[in-house]
Amino acid sequence: MTGLHRTMLNKVGLSRKPFVLIQGPPGTGKTQTILGLLSAILHAIPARVHSKGRLRGVKRGPELPINEKYIHWGHASPWLSNINPRDENLPTDGDDGFYPTTGNELKPEVVNSCRKYRVRVLVCAPSNSALDEIVLRILNAGIRDEDDHVYNPKIVRIGLKAHHSVQSVSMDHLVQQKHSHGVAGTDADNIRAALLDEAAIVFSTLSFSGSTIFSKLNHGFDVVIIDEAAQAVEPATLVPLANGCKQVFLVGDPVQLPATVISPIANKFGYGMSLFQRFQKAGYPVLMLKEQYRMHPEIRSFPSREFYNEELQDGPDVKIQTQRAWHEFRCFGPFCFFDIHEGEESQPSGSGSRVNIDEVEFIVSMYLKLVTRYPELKSSSRLAIISPYNYQVKLLKDRFKQIFKEEAKEVVDIITVDGCQGREKDVVIFSCVRASKSKSIGFLSDFRRMNVAITRARSSVLVRM
Image (cartoon, rainbow, N blue to C red; front, side, top):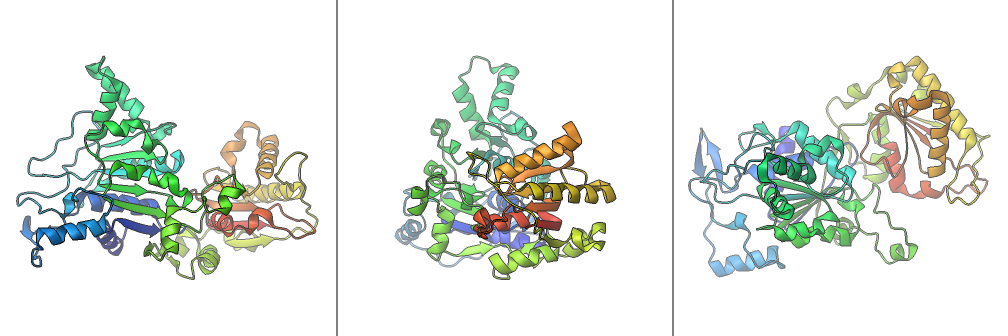
């Protein structure tokens, strides 16, 4: 993260706007931005700054009369009756952060006595996978305190289906550890509430944030951060706000995948619109991350022009970092289209999905040519085949299983467009399927799906159409 980026995050993190909207196009470091926000929120010192090892006061304007303060607070948070603690006078002998611990031990967190207030943060996402991505990043990279030192804050991940990589901080695991440490017989709900009280950051899916476990907390959350906010319907986004927060950060991208709404009638009446989009359409200011660090410039060029008003810029050395040996062959990228005239789509009986068998065979041949010459790409972590149609994905998986047997999942990642948001690979082969005489393009007409499909790749996008 650059110094300029960190300064921006500190400014945003200290913003007293009740809602802050951050748009994160593909490859712009949205998750890293959330980590930076957490560091700024938990450790920034708005009323004081460091100077040569000691704290000195910051010059303030004239103190407002208390009745005028209440007016300002009312405008900032009209649905709240309590004062935002960050607007109060800070103590003269401390700051408003909390004392960093070395990890997620089960002992109560040590809070320095001079720190009169501790900011509490709830981080949410629509799905378990999106949530666990942030949890894992914090476990691996930590966050930074006010002295720019990296540490691991005490965190708790509540809810179901926690990925095994974040199991160490899941609520169920921590409760089991509490019992194994000699607190057997204690009511499980009380243990959960105690764990939540001890945590600096609590992680939950949007739906689970409405759980009754939150009703047992001694206090609510000061800040709520919602990742993938443009991929959640508005009522779901409102659930975590019921916990009494003073500030909300909505982080997402309205031109990537929207919320999944099955009912066409509900969609027609606007149920699929996210709170992020509603604010944006109303003219609320949106901070857009504009520097991308993932894609080769030739891949970045199209989405920047078509979806982001030419505002996406390449990070330092991104072209060098995404240049690959296979680029010596134009057919292997960075951005290449293949038009197969003899390909024909079909619709399996009783299925709303579509397939293109000729396209499957072409993609298999292309894959084999590519990995034979460049064996390092024979890995699901580096190469993906993406299609908008479930049946085409199934057909591709079956074909690769015929060739590679049980190793198929290890040599290539085959996924739908809706399942690939948030992922990135060196090479993406995109199977469009559509080849009808009516020239209908179906799912491909959704620009958001197209945006997601072509921006997963770091070095090469190969499109069969």
